Amino acid sequence: MEKLYMLHGFMGTGEEHFQNQIKYFESDFEVIAVDLPGHGKEEESAEDYFTYTLNWLEERIRGQGAGYVLGLSLGASLAIHTAMNHPELVKGVILTGYAPSVPESMRPLMEEQYKTFINIEEEDPEVASHFKQLHGEKWLKTVHRVLHMMTYDYPEVTAEQLSAINVPLLLLNGDQQLHEVQAAVKLKEANERFRVSLVPEAGHTPNMDKPNIFNTVLEDWLST
Image (cartoon, one colour):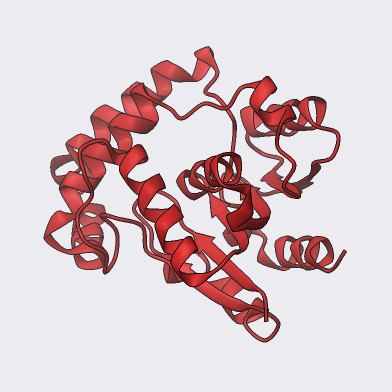
């Protein structure tokens, strides 16, 4: 049975962000819903979050065996960089809620979001309480480290890098986020071997917004 790794997004867990996919695919795949460093049951991450987590992930896949890698948002960035660095570990990569770079027009919005989240205990105590319950005492360090990286040091992928990827790739973004619609165009222009699809009436998290459509498209791609 092929392995299907699932990499969650910011401040989620494998089970929380992929509950609709785990049950759907577990009869045909060995589903491995990963908790990334600093999230869920995993230990705290290092200060350089992305580099540390990417190395951690590559070692984990190397230990458990190559497979398909499905990543949402933060998880998608990790998935594509794993495919670029170690294609022998990745039989196929599925990206959702993903863009290879941050448009300049979005930077002020992201900086505002960063300021809100680093003060989340005052701004939204209910969300802060949920994060603490889900991730334990390490939650606030994770917020700071991941958001700082995504806001000020986004792990961009250039068109040249995209064109060099030989691993089968599916991009499955929602159609409600303009920059993620544009990302679908960019990926297809950079590498015609990629398959890109847009999930209607879905936002940044298509696998949660429209799970039935998402699962059907993914299942079709995995079976071809």
